[in-house]
Image (cartoon, rainbow, N blue to C red; front, side, top):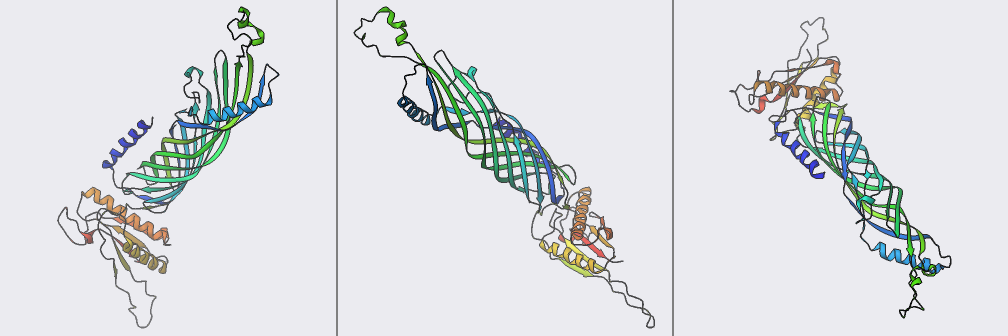
Length: 437
């Protein structure tokens, strides 16, 4: 099962080469996942065994016999390696809420339910026909930190880690019986333990807010102790042949009631200790409430920021001086090659433009995206649109009213520096911000 999960994930990774450019939303999101999970077989050790009660058909047994039996069960069982617990693959569901606080990083709270069915004996070596029946369910609460690789791609991988706690609920009854011996193991236990997980997967951006997540989780739970009860029943035969050990026992000796078997019934309580390792593969929907950000930077350092000013207006009449309209201000934000995410210098230009716009309440703000001639014209139209939208959302996040902000995009049609087709040019990879009439 785990090999199948890994194969599905590997096939999905191979699709990354066909990924297209997309926006990454910053801010809060919610998600829900459903799929399957499979636990590794747990090797269990029986510890702290106590003889609770002992009864037999021969009422003459002494308390010393109980002490001897208790010592034997501790010595023999604690050192044995004959217990294991295995579950069948079943459904797993998760609910998540988190925050994308940068194009690459996000943190989330995760609630999970993993169901498990036990369809085998916990005592190794028993005939499968004598299999026990039960369930082992996990309820988890984790804090995950996720790193999105290449968030500028519509289909991109992610990795992460999580820490938290898991509640383990186990209910099991398994029996073994032959002509002279029977035992029944019963587990009714509910424990909570610390846990950690490793996460890997693929995110496919279906729309500007909706992502489909294919997620693999490897969960490991710290040592778990299951409360177990063993009911043992067997026949005890009297091996004392005296006074007939000289070989002259009568024929009736073999069936004599005086030497017949005594039925012994014992009850033991203890704990089975083991480790849970779980693998799950889920498909989920993630909905973002945040603002869009362009793709992550691809290459190289950005050019220096440019801030240019337009003309100022003065009163034409020395007698009646009308109120001068605010100066039209122009700002230029440059981008790395094939990217809609500016660097720190570009963010500083956006911040300066936002400050200017806030100082001119009501002044219209127009953001126009551009691209160089590298790449196809349709692709450059989309890229210039992404650049304009990213800058506009940045202005709005910095307090500029959305009602005064408009966007436009020109692709490669209006280069700042005319070049031939297919030429990379840093001055043409830009978005302009115009404030005022």
